[in-house]
Amino acid sequence: MAAKIDIPPWIPPKPSTKTDFEWAPLHTLDLSQITGEEFDQVPEEVVQQVGEAFSKDGFIYAVNHGLSYDQVLRQFSIGQYAFDGISEADKQRCKADMLGAGSFVGYKPMGHWELHGVRDRIEQLNFGSQSFHSEARKRFPDNMQPLIDEIHEFARYNHDVILRKILAVLSLVLKLPVQTLWNLSRDHETRGLDLLRYANYRPASKEEDQTNGGVRLQGHTDFNSVTLLWSQPITSLEVLMPDNKWRFVRHRPNALVINLGDAMHFLSGGYLKQTIHRVVAPPEDQAHYNRLGLFYFALFNDDVPLKPLIESPVVAEAAKKHNFWAEREANGEPIPTAGDWERMRVRAYGQGGAKKGSDGHDHEKIAGVDVTLYNDIEPKRREAEPKRRDIPPALPRIGAVV
Image (tube, rainbow, N blue to C red; front, side, top):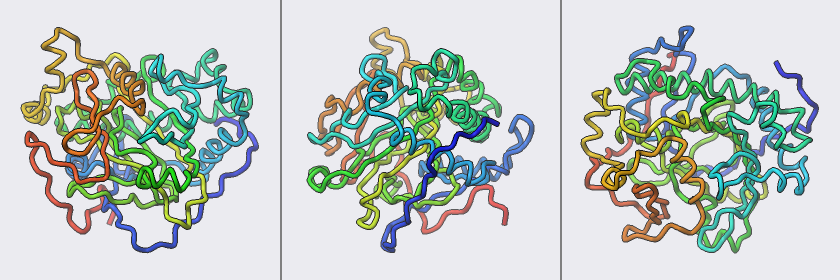
């Protein structure tokens, strides 16, 4: 265990006293149900229900991940210190090269993204999975150096335990050998681009919220394979559910909120849904807080082509309805790798390249694929996809011990 450095503790914001939130009824995955030295023992019920959730709903909760709440709160304290304990000059020195390299590694300052003329109020510190080598870690501020071993340990646990369990389940959902997706992700510290992210959403002005209808981060899909979000108390995250309604994601202490991104959608031939989500202004009794976020964004290794894994019968059937890379193939261009797609989306996001379509959403073509940024209207279902059924009033807990 890395030695702990004394920093100010993070005190979780008080939950909102409002009672009229419309909560998303999400499944809960009990990660302790996935066992074996290689996390290859997965109950069939878990496979079935995770497949149901990720082929239709998008988000799930995960519990019993193996870390104590104190360990998780410590990571939020590190995140708080990364923004409040570091000078602006050091942040600028460590600024991420988003437009050039297409990389989030380092500090993302507020104002890099723009929506309807309003600059974002989100700052981030991102550690890449290759940021922990002796030379790479020097790019981070001096005040963060005593914490990097501890950050590295946490990042590794997210990848080697939590992510690996989820990938085992998803491989079985696709009727592939249990280690298939893990084998495309395992070399993250030499060939990967995974990100451990601390994010700080500072309050917007009333004028900014009025301009954007209270939307702080436009409806979007993540670029990666699997996103691990450590739940926090401010009510701001919304998911677009299968009935085309935005619903809030409820906070659960010491739980994870898990969603899939573009890369998993591509490799599954469109069977596994990349989750549409956004961040909106919190309720009035939480409006004065900074919203601190803790994420692990997992990617397949940099050189993994994002072509459907058609050795899977599930993927082969789903891929008949989609040809994501038809335009590139027609032009004799290679299918993007996981790293290519990440870099292209990082460079393009929030830079004004999207144009409003007839459906009311913003669209931008990247590598021949229509990337949609969702506005506050009910999106039209694509004719090529089957209509999703309405969600029932309650959903069972995945792998729960009754």
